[in-house]
Image (tube, rainbow over the protein chains, first blue to last red):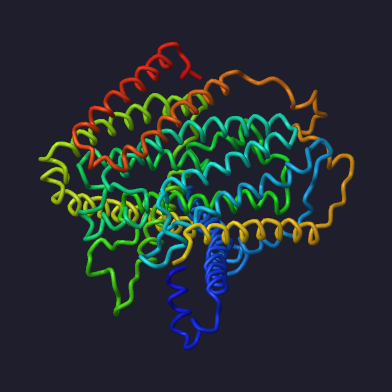
Length: 397
Length: 117
């Protein structure tokens, strides 16, 4: 919003003729409109990519019929969902049934208010930004329980209760590993957390106190994955046991709203992970921060978030779903003790004068490990692609 | 100087507007034509037995209670974590005491089987 306000004041005579409240609300509406465009059009792309990726990983083609390479498939699906009749079963509690998907969408959407895309491109720099994202993310839990309860359907109720238990359980490790970052940065403002990681890849919190923060990163990432209800943690909608979980009774665009929220939440969670551990809008090399004098921070943040969204999709089509008891076991008996342990150990290391700024070997691990990981991933992708191409050739021949 | 919470308010208004708009649009575009079979409760094609407003396992309640306890503790940890660098060893010892109490409760819950599903 600051960026937009600054743009406005470049227009001659703007500051004199337009009252402050008007320009603030105009800038706010424009920024909100940008976010709205991003969240309503984003899932069209995400769903297409996810279906293509699933096809590739399961050795099939994915959508191919609508448009070239099936590119228009999700657009056609959206239009179909919009024109579908929204069924209200006789037994549902109507007001709650309607409000629930709205609440889920609003909860996912509001997280955008504090995501820092660059020093100026940010809705608002709250002092408690990181806390705000966690808090507003819980709003969608309320929506899920409401949906399950209002449906008056046993499958839906079970899905809702399970999702509540799951999201609530995984929130604790997420909050606890967030404390590690807050202790190191000394701030809850997302701008200051990013500012503390400026100066290149080796300064990112992921590589501080190597390898302790890598563990914190893994705990936080697993917890966000579970809070987005993605496989291997998609118990709330486990279709093999619960039909469709909390959205069993939903149809038409109400059903689509849950998916809109899910993909938006995935993006917000991934953006949060990149802000907290991967430097946010800071480039891996300070040289790459500006292109021809322009700050390309937003590109970096979106690229990092999309890379993590890709990991979400990749895990979904690789791992089987956990059982409910295994799910609870992982949250309470594995992730939470690790997170508590990390708070104590990193707290001690920060207080000791010798290690207050990180371990002496920190700068030496970031780049080599990143290069190794990226190289390995590229090699694997190349081999998978070659294998896929050979299968296609043999099938044609 | 821009009040910090105004953008959040604007975003909330836009989000609620978007949700309301989609509901109205979907209602207008997809006209509801209810029939008896369509508006029955879905239970794999069988007529539903009883209602869903039944008793469910107490485990959910237990998880909820432990969540509230630990989440409140986490909320207490945030202000401490914010000024941590200024506190020095005093802060560390304070945190150790707090963590011991928290860990004691957690270990007790683990031991009595509250965390088993």
